[in-house]
Image 1 (tube, rainbow, N blue to C red):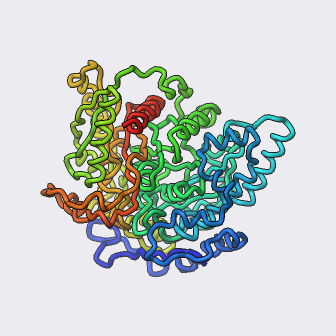
Image 2 (image 1 turned 90 degrees about the horizontal axis):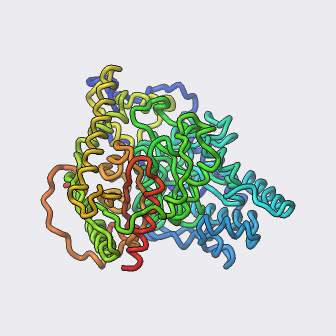
Image 3 (image 1 turned 90 degrees about the vertical axis):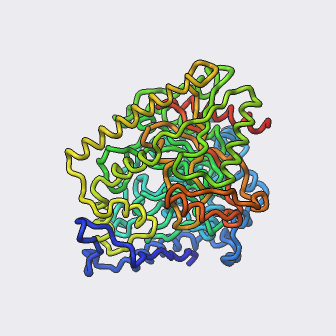
Length: 582
């Protein structure tokens, strides 16, 4: 069986997350599950392997040893020249070529499925395999185009991968929990999946997410750990880490993830992709399975991961073309503004602010260097760049983690206790933030909501005040910043979400984009002097060694104003043009 071992164990010194301050939760000695959890995991992996074994010719002849870190080219070894051409095209180009009959939907799907099989063996990134359904749909789409001369929609024939906890009718939705494995077969599609089908997309694979979903790495006891294809000692991010891994190695041209604290943007950054987090209620969100359903003190969003900026626009435009607000009451009736997304409404001179340091954890050298490079490029292109003054990132983190864990993590612990499975290290780290306290009472949650709204109001004032420092007399158009203080992090070493979750708390749209290629240790031969301001910064900077991050992609994040998704993508195009010229 081609499954990477899950080396995640519960550190004996770390407590299991108390219901009461003096009574830690531990899985019951005889859980209600009759089958021991390792047997459930083995059975689930065996189901996946049974399907994969039908495609033996697509698998790597030999899997490399642990000393081989970069497997990004290995997964392409079984492709012929035409298939390589296909998988290196972005979604926008693929849909056009299928429409023009340069490729059939079946041959496009075949190419991506071949990479997917190999990627699973090398990185452990997939969960449910939908190849049979995918090929059936691809044949139908090819026949429709042959018979009618027209496509069924803007995504006709495009393979699209889906994060595990997003419902696809007829398929399991274990969501990284042993207790949910084979117990959560979806009886309907998520709204985003429904729209993708109407648009002509071909669904063929579901991808890994971490236990509980509340983690910026991807590891669970059902399927194990997902690794970064450019350096297997590093994480591909989370919670959409299966998506980022598969797309990064050309096993998918476009994927759907979710983000409540960085779960689209961090994986995109760690694997050199584009990832977009809209504001809440702009894209459809109904039809997801996870803990804390019904909790709306802090809300996640659905968004795309892709290999080009224009594919982010393609996804958003498609979602709203099908009037998502008619399918989900919570979606705002805001049609996609193409003229804004295309940059036709942008002024000739824009003002950007750069967040160099959030005043809690200073970013590692490759990120700081990249911020300097984007500053120089934008100035050279005739735009204005000022410094962004950090706004209470530490306080913001302390607030949002309370909103994540209103019940002190009880539902997470209870769900794990159903099967007796242990918490993996990323879960342990997150849930430890609620150690020593009771769940909040209802009136206390009201106060937290008020704190959240006050924080957002302060953020609005803070942004508006930048007009006093720009030469345009307008507030800055966008903020450019890190997505994390490190590049792709070594496994189980995530310690700071403040560069990503901050924007969820403010509910501002953000896009991550690859900007600096991949990490070359020889370019960073000295370590800058620093004096850590806190224990977290100390731990993160003790992690810095250029060789550790060899091959990791270097990315940045662009933030815009609330519900200004189109302008964010227009500004991204401008930023990339400036950097390419420079």
